[in-house]
Image 1 (cartoon, rainbow, N blue to C red):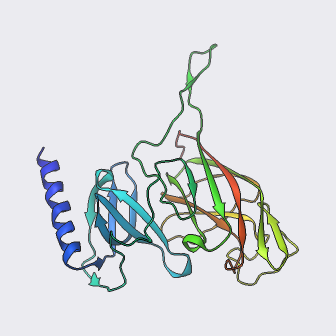
Image 2: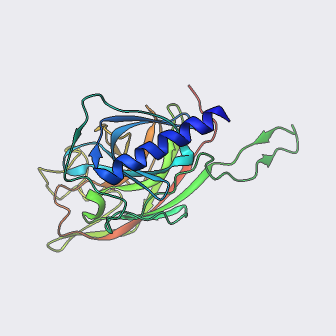
Length: 255
């Protein structure tokens, strides 16, 4: 009860501060599921925090409800900014409470990720948990700076399988499937040695260690962080279409 009371006072104080003046912080947000997010808190309203992570043209936005947050450490060098969004900004994303995410929607954030009923091995009677499955539609254009928040916060050591289908337009009569189009040159694409227009991923709020997915890939998460998906293309302005992506997460974390 003491913790709840203390945390409630912190939330109230933060809400009052954001009502008077909007600040952008270099903050560390610790979630109740053990995840640690580093970014800038730009607003708090209706019980939700809006946090900007990363930098440059691929900066990403995350939303968290107050009930998900365990603690917040504010950067002592934080300074006011006039560009921070408030909770009344109509361009802010809205939580759709769905595991199917479209670019521009806020990915669902829960402390208890959706899980399926365990599969029982009738021979050994040992429970084998099914993979957690998430469906995501990844738009090829520059909506949300070209990144789709999958809604999953990966843990280091987790096995993740991602597969993509569909075809997108890269503009100028050029097209690509999720595996990419190796015949197209693009000096500005994020992964210079991989096929243009292919499906890519990244884990973390300020991480540029991009992962080329193509039409299918399985990998082990190298760090904790939100899982984002995008397209390996340097100019997203004239793109259109979307990939249909399926994500499967092994609930058992291995190290």
